[in-house]
Image 1: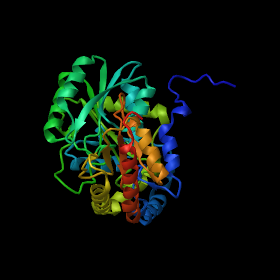
Image 2 (image 1 turned 30 degrees about the vertical axis):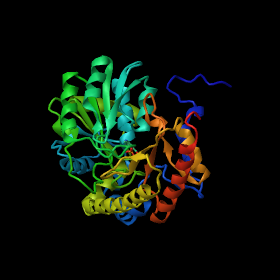
Image 3 (image 1 turned 90 degrees about the horizontal axis):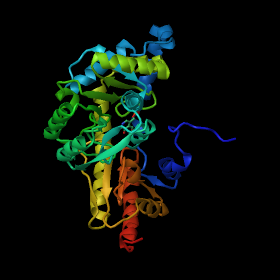
Image 4 (image 1 turned 120 degrees about the vertical axis):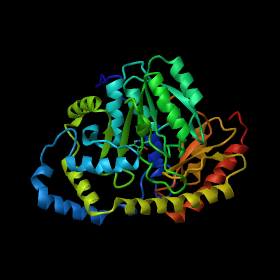
Amino acid sequence: MTYKFSKRVPDPKNDAVGDILKAAADPKVTSFAGGLPAPELFPVQGVKAAADKVLDEKGPAALQYGSAQGVPELRNVVLKRLEVEGIHTTADHVMIATGSQQSIDLTGKMFLDEGDVVIVEKPTYLTAVDVFRSYGARFVGVDMDEDGMKMDSLEEALKNNPRARLIYTVPTFQNPTGRTMTLERRKKLVELADKYDVMVLEDNPYGAIRWEGENLPSLKSLDKTGHVIYMGTMSKIFSPGLRLGWVVAEPKLLKRYTMMKQSADLHTDSFSQYVCAQYFTDNDINDHIKKITALYHKREQLMMSAIDKYFPKGVQHSNPEGGMFLWVMVPGVKDSKELFNAALKRNVAVVPGDPFYGSDPVPGTFRMNYSNTPEDGIVDGVKQLAAALDEVMSEPATK
Ligand SMILES: Cc1ncc(COP(=O)(O)O)c(C=O)c1O
């Protein structure tokens, strides 16, 4: 039979990233393609103890339906994390979501009608592109440099697109580039959002994982007019499997989020919320974040020094001060998939750049992840990748 799907349903023929990750999962392959945290640092024993305590002390509540806004104990934990971001707020501004992926989805559903414009960094987080596209969005990409989104290009985009409904940004250790927006640009972005009256979705999964440079204030902490919606997540500082994220917005707007969440999934898993809150009460999360940061820094340094040693001349890359990714730009390559194939032939996987662009992909780009590859695989993987780049760069540019 032929299904009569809605326009929102993606065609499996276009699942380029799924195909890439499938190829990268081959045990022969050194994968820099995924975006997973290091599993050896998951606090398994701590979670086990927290789960026991929750079942002993709050079992019925943890196994019962709960409120769409989330368990108060976890919202209080989130308030403490927000303090670190310079966001001094109250529990009525916070809703727990099923990962920040759900916050992106609810935001798309809330603000976008067919043909509306979402302004994104060029490149941007690819799964946000998928979500906004499913709500009929058109994308306008704003150029970036090592200091994040360029503000003159952003203003141009806002001027030229009266149907812009949302600016989506990952200002700190961005996925996919690892770049961080400067304070000056953060201030300007908030000013422009107010001037053009456009909402900003600030996505900050990686901000806590910093090994170099100064912490910068979140956009939300600079926002005086309520244009910024902030999202955070437990996925990179604790565990992605528990699916816990949060949205921070003015209570009037948060009420809408809560109603939309209710119709999406009633509420986020109560048990996970209680367990996470208990873990944070009984353990020092900052200690845990320090361990994550130290390991990722070590892996990033190994990767960077191998890149500097082995990559062919002319290849450029970002220099992250934290997070999980770096971005590579290879001159003279017309098709990023070609890079992927050449690397896979040598049993190394990266994610070619195209799906990270809302529109007009820049060829010759790819993303590398360092958080999930054990140290002993990194140098050899980079060497093989360098050989693949040599091969692709020495081919005629017309190919
Ligand atoms: C920029 C960004 N936003 C959102 C997410 C989704 O995270 P989660 O739903 O696990 O909180 C990710 C995951 O990698 C991400 O990189």
